[in-house]
Image (cartoon, rainbow, N blue to C red; front, side, top):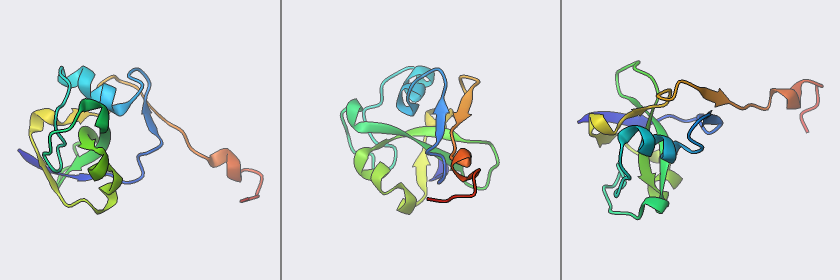
Length: 112
């Protein structure tokens, strides 16, 4: 088991091959999850979402874990989550991650 925390500011990151972070987790973990990794509540897989986390006191990168809709909705206020190391799927496991941003919105000097 290892302690992780939610990584804010990752909503614009996308896996180029899997389509969603939950599909990314399923592809690389090899099975469909049946519970939230934060509250451990049993949940139908379609009610789980892949969320970015990082290990505490480590610079080992970004990982994806499945959270229920309730926990994902309050991810900014979630305490430290204790997860099985095997449940940490590297964000870059497919090799390609894109980041979309709004830099063009500000290029003309207008912020409206």
